[in-house]
Image 1 (cartoon, each protein chain N blue to C red):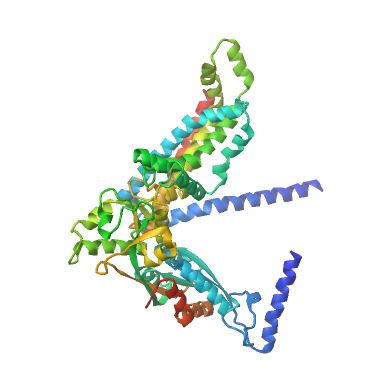
Image 2 (cartoon, chains in turn red, brown):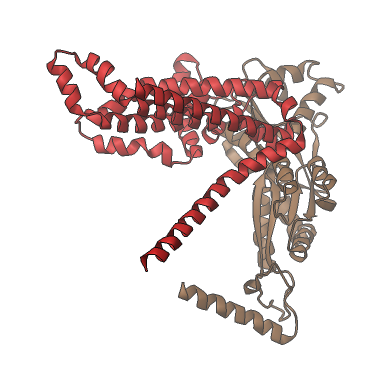
Length: 270
Length: 281
């Protein structure tokens, strides 16, 4: 009785997994198929617009990830170790930008940092500086939507570090800073790396918040996803351009994910 | 669930009633539940859903037009997808199930016709451009001001009709007799801060005060009312935007789609377009 039921269950599970895998693979197959059919992909990749978008995306996402690490690590550590009022609320709020559509993040950024925004207006009045239509705005948009992925991962990394280890370090006379650097961070390393990858990848793919808050100008705020949208609208690159750009993003994502996976494995081993 | 079933069954019975009268309620898009007898007692052949792909600048006018059309044909339902005409053209050519494509220029409609996704188009409205400015602290008071250093200018993308027309205005104001300056367009485009995906996004950026100036259609400025300032473009430099509409080949509901296009040219449709500031073709 039990064996046929198990077999049926196994068959169902396999079938569902196959359908799921197919659903994920087909869009990529479509991209590759179209790129081959168009035959222009390679020449399009060498156009200035694509190069600028690629460079901009790379550096903006990298800067956003570094900022997420610098600004997010202390927060993640406090959330994991600290006992302060409102900790549970802060912990829940971290997820907000993950759950919210990025367009909402873009509108929210405008209401805060726009020229009529909460702080944007006084800042412009004092210094003449405006955030909109600058690469700064691109990084800010990416930071807002992507950093929570890092903080979330870092926090669970710190959670998993045995507090006993840290206590032992203290009793041996190590300072808190030294303990954090020599015990906590190495222990949480794979989680920190994974968080950085997630953050960087999410930042690379950011579209909605960037378009709304930073605008779309080649070489200044036009990141890869914005170039895809512009190409789709029929800019000089056209639909083949959208396909080519998507393909680069896909390859870039694969390379980065693979590289970070290797780094995380090595980091965990050392 | 059960309750919904009962309701839809009752509607189907209504359709069957119409059949019994002896007039076939068009084999429309498969959705017989929407087929209801018209006021005159004869079944309206214009039934079912149509999907209208329309330029962003048509947003307000077409929503009203759709409501009036549904009022005229209770069994019909018009749904809309508003985006830049160039985005819509790409979508239609990629097989989007649009019944109708209404473009803000002939160029994008030609893109669709060249791909044999529509066979004939009709011009149905005209529009022209204005410069919009924020209501607070506007630095742009004339067209010439757009080229002043430091002005934050926002345009629609260069293939978006509104963006193409705007660049045409800049070129005309640099080359035609009485031009502002020969380098006017160059200087103005040096102020360009963003190429927005559609004309309504340009309007929003100006409305928010993020941009100091943007080129939009007169109808967009009118839709924003007092939320933006309007700077007129001298008639000699302005361009006339021509809107064209076509029933697309991908569509499933030709009867209703044709009725919608026809409705646009009827007095009631024309009145709605005019009330939103569009010129008659």
